[in-house]
Length: 335
Image 1 (cartoon, rainbow, N blue to C red):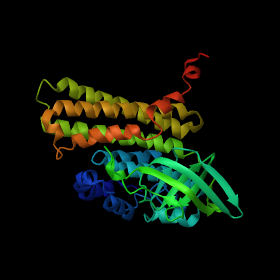
Image 2 (cartoon, rainbow, N blue to C red; image 1 turned 180 degrees about the horizontal axis):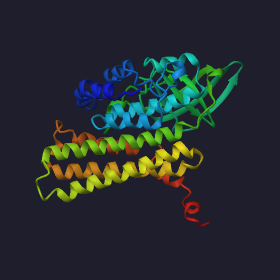
Image 3 (spheres, rainbow, N blue to C red; image 1 turned 60 degrees about the vertical axis):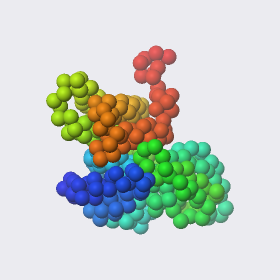
């Protein structure tokens, strides 16, 4: 099954016309997500046995990158949704998987921040924790919530789930990302999710897809504005192209590693996330430079991608945290 034609149609007719408004007013991209859900794209990674598309991480990455070229916020919501869905498809309840497959349920990760604590009271579990940078906070239908070494399915309407109303930030404003607190949240003990392995590689690899989309979008806008004819900008445009292509090579290599050797791909996934994040900051910075005063015009969309790239760099796990966890000495053969 291919989603390319439907994806292109939704991007052109819904995502592009709303991208500036989503950013300017920190408005959640509900119209785009509804359109993507109606065409099966929200449920494309869910198993075919429950009506999903059965697509893999590579296919999800293509969707996220394509959307990120025009709207980083919408792409980031998809990133978190697909990451949560990868967990839910393995250990979530059948009815919920079917709802995601049908495009009627949006989920998100609440994985970063204080670990918190869990206490059991018969068939009910009490979760108390505070999570930072939760994408689609207050808009998602459910959260895949990490607490200790376990993951829990937390419905959006669960009592005790507190979501601040102010979502304004520098970039990726339409993600309405913010801290979410369980103070505490009570869920059935059966809401424990037993498969957490997909969350880490999916979230980081799809984050790299967002970065690739931001870079490609910034480069396309810069070339469209300049026409490539000014010799003073050619070197910087070439640097943008080379930096983007270098990330793409590493991205494709990492996807192969995750597919064929998932147990040995952890460090490669981390290094991809670092490389892509830093490259997106550098490429969008060059786009601002080569376009001069025009880069600050909202209609060009370069300053939005510039802000989005920097906001993406603040999403946990941060670059420094990822580098701290890489086994650099073991990889180089030194102890």
